[in-house]
Length: 129
Length: 238
Image 1 (cartoon, helix red, strand yellow):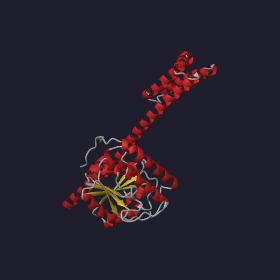
Image 2 (cartoon, chains in turn cyan, red):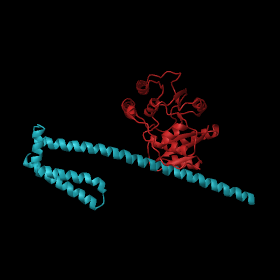
Image 3 (tube, one colour):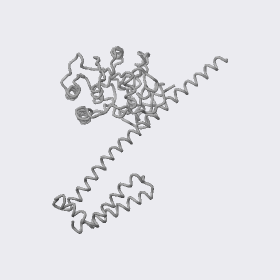
Image 4 (spheres, each protein chain N blue to C red):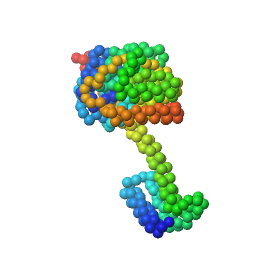
């Protein structure tokens, strides 16, 4: 791994770590969701500070360049992550849909009850007069 | 049989009053509910002014979400069957009776089909419909001549299933899935009008995308689905 790549990795991971922490501090993100990014930046820092780990993987897996290992690793994790996010979005959309439908139905039922009460009152009044 | 017509409406201010008035005047024996799917025009206001039965959804959910809201309402009110009906005046209520008769013979779903006895004309749109028919035939072994027809009737068991589950849009892929699961589906010959006013949501690109999605869904996805009922806690109506 070239020095440039290492420096880039270290700065990017440190920056992203700080960014994540600042978002949590300003309560822009739930802690549950931040854990992934914190772990991710830690792993990136470790990989760039101790490239021996990457070298070891490169030789045991008979890969050509250590940079490939880094890319492969990051791409694999991001793929899994984006898949998980699709599942999350589906669930969220489903919940929003349920809420919207419930609001609409509640309003309708409320109106029905109101109409019923009004017509009852009216018939009572007619009886009395 | 208590029938509820579920009429999803998105920006149908030019059609909705005429369509509903026809139903109210000529077919007062059928209940209906308009589901206003977050329209940005005067659909909702015109319905309220005329005293129509309406569910207003605060945001736009798309046809599947709006239709499902109507089915949840039907389930809550304990209706025996539901008819999916268009708000743009394409569907003719005079065919409801024939469809009801068919449903009473014990079918789960009855489709108002344009091509039971009549041939499909050879247009670009019909090529898509034909491909869907072939796809359903391939995966289920059964022939549905008009899978894209938006005029469908559902029995009581189906109302519950459509109301509480995810991925039950009123679309050909759900039909294919249910066929595969052993639901009985019949078709009744109907005629449809051209939409009377306003613009159709479907243009060429959108139609092509829709057909592509449906084909992938029918051929590849639906066979993996497990039929398991999510139990949603919903208060039954009064």
